[in-house]
Image (cartoon, rainbow, N blue to C red; front, side, top):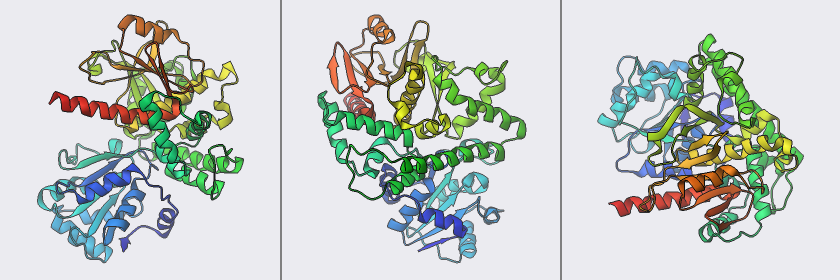
Length: 482
């Protein structure tokens, strides 16, 4: 049974929320049964499904839910005035909600917790004094809205769990094509061509167009109707339009946050930096340039705006390294970086672009298509918990991504080149191979699986499977080291 003080409109919204199975659900289930459980903090951009996931957890694994949304009911902050000892908080919440909060049987959730910093601070005491209570919090702007000078963040006393949009595999599952994941993984493991390659490339472009925001995916799935659906189905204009409507609303909500939670002068700079991202990515040189925001713009003026966007979780930063050598952080050049959006579907919406425009047909749109493909790869790498860098300069050759992959064989980081189509010849990759002689390099494109002349070909639809393989290799290396 759920007890909360949210409005009927909010409850209705969650009743309509998607019921896709996500890896996030498994993480939450493990947390709820862990004997070393600490209070849980879900981090991530707005609309990535944090609140819905917690409500789903409560429905499946608890007898009831004590839910407070500080944005819907700001007066609930009064429960945290004066004492923030768990016994006092629980007593006040029981009075406020009219329920009994029973350890291990009630999930306590504080939503939009950045609006009540005392609630965030109280997690330290739930960890130390009352670990029998299951407490989870979510907040869309925790990284930028919490005034840590006033109340301390409970460092070491909570479990932090980043929440990202649905991955490509989760997207396939939502569309009813989860069986294709097995074929993708097998092809990657054997470097053998994958059947239905062209159909899977089309699905990867559909994912780039729709993105992974749960409500966007739900709107697309609902609008296309119930199955059966085949890999070769052409998405209807109606379904794509339904998804675009939700994407536009989310982008608008992000811009509203920039006004709502930031002082006017800073808000204008954040808004300007945000609005420049699609143009910045579509340049031949994807490096973020302050002068592209407006004439005369300088880092001192706009660097805090970029930091705000990254802290809010709506963009991902990829910095340059001067040498492709592990550990990459030792060679980082923080003044040179690229800015990608957290969700490629939202980027497509900001371009006003269609799925058809991702098909290579015009050399004039090559930079746009390359930007979307790079954003998709970056989104996938970040969701897998990896930290990508990039190497080189446009004038001397540039490699889109480098990953730290400790290896007893070589010292070079793992290089990833990204191409949006099948035309894959590039001097940058050849120059990198000649200069550094890596064991092999990975080329991500629309070509099928294969391995030739030290280049491992990985199709766009196999990037997530690649991250799984890399995670397995990293675990094996770590075990071998011990």
